[in-house]
Length: 279
Image (cartoon, rainbow, N blue to C red):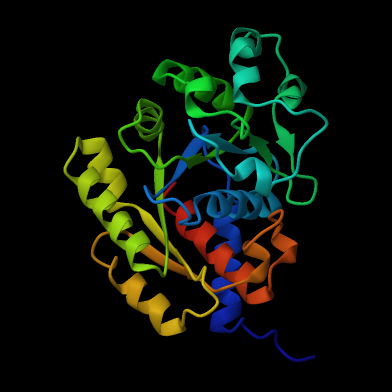
């Protein structure tokens, strides 16, 4: 019998990334996915990061569509046995925080993803912002419920940094994920967002310096050089920059980890590990 061989660099890196996303922490953690430009892959990133953490680390992962406007997360993920949204959850907050409340009680408000094993708390995609106005206090109340029942909360956000809902989300954030595509306008807005946060209070400055930037090749005509060019622009602004190749399964339809190409799944595992190492 020969001696067992040590894993090669690629296998060792993959094992390390899996260990990172499979780890649990003391107490819940909140990750916020941000970019003030629409179409910059926020919902895609929130869903697929959640899938990575849930598939490797187990249940207790919630993706929360923290958006005043018509967000897209509800359209890109699986609907449960109901059509509840965060507007339905709000009146139930007091009962869900009672001592006798159980995990199963939350199932009436979140949408279980049967393949990827995380849950989604939706905004109401059919309502305008003024029909589902959420206050900062509402955000904190929902966050208290989410933290009671989940180990990881991944918050998908809107496009308005001045929205009190957006600002309160940042107050609760432990790890910031700034997303962009290879489009220059998306990248410029992402860079400006990091710069702005760095000039705010110490909490926001720390989030900015410790941020993970995820650059997605949303355009099939973009090149690897485009990815690297955009990624390189964030090298001095963030802790880590991860690139995601183009994948038709991310363009439209429901987002599922197994529908992605192997190289794309590996890239999302790397992205998840980068996030986990900041928690």
